Amino acid sequence: MVSGSFFMPAQESGIKEAEQKLQGMPDDTSRVNLLLKLGKYYCGSENDKALMYLQEAYTISTMLDYTAGIGKSLMWQGRIYFYKSNPALSNKYLDKAKRAVESTGDTATLSYWYLAKAFSLKTTGDYVNAVKMFSKSIELSKISGNMTRVTICYLEIGNTLLDRDNVEKAMRYFRKGLKLAQETKNRVVVSNALTSIAKAYESKNMLDSSLYYSEKALKIRVAMKMERHIASSEKTIGETLIKMGRYAEAERYLKHSLSIFEKMNEKTGAVITKLSLANALVMQNNPGGFSLAENTLGEAEKLKNPLLLSFVYIKLSDIYASNNNYKKAFDFRKKYEVLKDSLFNSEKEKMLAEVETKFQTAQKDNDIALLKEKAALESNKNIMLVILLVVFLIVISLLFVMFKYKSTAFKRQQKLLEQEKIIHAQENQINEKENQLLQEQLESKNRELASKALEMIRLNETITEIIEKLEKFSSQNGDNTMKINSINKIIHDLENHTKQNIWNEFNKIFKNIHSGFYARLLNICKDLTTTEIKIAALLRLNLNTKEIAAITFKSEGSIKTTRYRLRKKLGLSSDNKLVPFLMQI
Image (cartoon, rainbow, N blue to C red; front, side, top):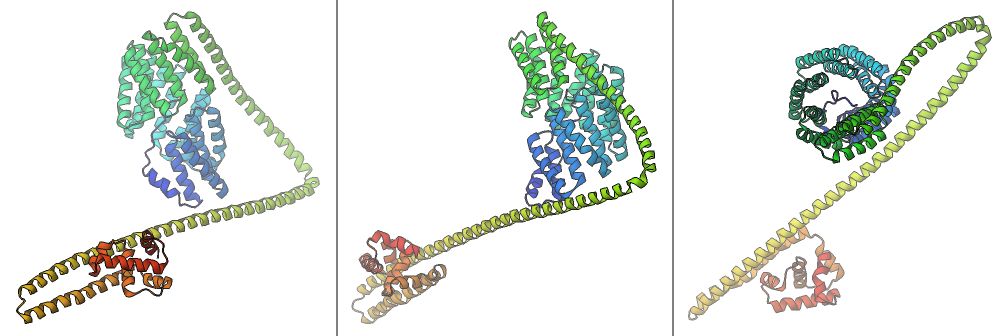
């Protein structure tokens, strides 16, 4: 069974910023350390994502010969496979990590390695060595000053003793762990200690006390949003409620617990919870409980964990016995006893193997001493052999160094090529943004020019109204020649001087925005008149005939005639093609 007292939620901050920072980092030790941080953060929640970060950290660390990175990446991969209910792979990675972790002299990391190894051993039923590993972790954690880890180890030793039915001794470790957790004000570990005490009371059939401590632990875990811990607490409370005969309440707690385990893809926790839920359903005479129990057995067999499978057998035996199906209950009890004996024999074999290994080691030490004596007598004969061996090793070492140098150079070259591709992509992106900015600026200028044209139309309409009023006033003073001449002069000035100023201002803005338009237009057709060029510029802004007539003080018929001449000179077959053609120049 997977213990719940060690699954602490990551409290890292700025994870999203760290992932973004990772994108531009080179393959150095800083990148490795950031990858390790991300791998640890996702270790208990998103296993596959954590594996991706840790495997990259291992690859880079190997290339850089970064021992600390190699050890930590392997160690945390071992932890992930523990969460994925694969103790064989977990032990394999942890064993590979040990030498690298020990060589760094990092006491804190080494104490964590012993803790992780203890969990993996406990999962496989190797309780004796698990307790040894927990004790070693306590020793190293005290040296490194990590009292939280010391507390965790106390609780886990207690849980191991509780699994061996040594309740009183287990309770002493739990009380000791709770006191230390309260002193260090670690609410996570306090909740774990409360859960362990609840388990001890349950084993003594003191169910009210067990439920009390379990609910206290759940309250802390809910407040801290610790999903994995919440699932574990609700599973424990559900199992206690079943023993108290409160089956409907138990069903509610167990269903919520199961939903969390399934969301986190924690298969072992899901299997255990399903069995308890099946029991709650059976006790309510719900036939779905038996089918759930049988399906859970198939899931447990796929995990290939003998300790978990033995737990499933005994639970199934209890479920069928409670429903008076004694034949099936007996069959599962028999399977449990066979597997239990197998596990016990396996543990004894391990202990015997350790004794035998120690004996063989001592025997080998004696043999080595005898060989050394013989070697001292024959040293003169072996001098040449040693020299040849040394030369051979030097040659091999040189070849290895050359190969490693070339391999590193090749990888660096590959890295440079990848960086050049990234730079090229970034340059393209910058160019696209610059082009987009220029396009936006051009559109803004066009809007400004269109606004200016609209202003010209309004101004011209105002001047036209003024001229009409002046002409009306002139007709009312037909007998006064002097006044008529003065009014006609004002009308003439308005029609000529004002028009010219407005056009000059418009033309200045147009040339600033569409520089080279006139030159390109004349390059296409050199015979264009000044009026045709002006009309072409206004058409370039997609103004209609009425708007152009208002700006230029000409009639719409005159503008249409000019458009016709312009289209013919430019060699266009249809008037509809004129404006698109001018907008492309």
